[in-house]
Length: 186
Image (cartoon, rainbow, N blue to C red):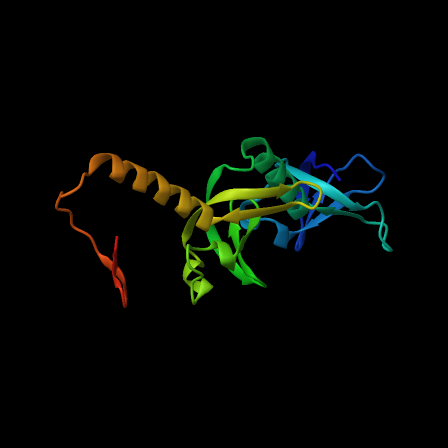
């Protein structure tokens, strides 16, 4: 299932014909190409052979699966657990959202913010910065945490602040919560 670099031989009505070096040519459906209208013969593409011959004797190829494999390999080469990544919030899934960091990464709702947000939808379509918590290579699964990143950034900011202020300094802050015993000020 490793991607093969091959050249497009022709472009038909709904399929690109690819010479895969077998007795039959392979077909890739046009829906797998972002640039179908400008695709030309001789363009090199990477594909995965899904089926050597289907019931019609056609070699079934997938460009989309090859793209996913290549994207996954690129993410593994450039990122490790603990790295900070940026991506776009894609969609809600059970327990959180998917964030596109080159491949879809799972951001659990409990890891979206320091306090669990009422609506995870506010992160969809927006750039999300997060820390990679876990990379499960065999299952092709990445879990990220925005909360961990925010907590670490707050800790660094708190340390910096405590090193620059002293007792009796006058500072400006924002009231974040009011309790019976007093107010919390950021």
